Image (cartoon, rainbow, N blue to C red):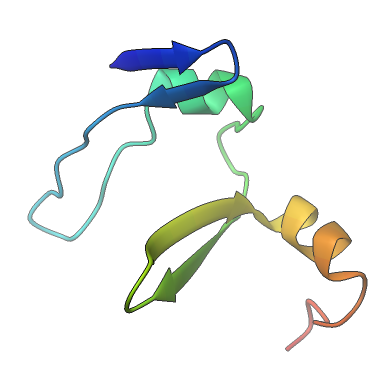
Length: 69
């Protein structure tokens, strides 16, 4: 892990045989990710992949997306 600033870091993870990754402890602590939390996986072919806690995603979107869909 490389700590870039108090609120920024970069770390590599390996993809397992089932396509799974482990969210590093630094990210779990920084973003208060706990067992059972749901993460949104967003992708853009030219920019990459992002993970966001689902509750934060829905707050950010301001109701544009309804969790029931």
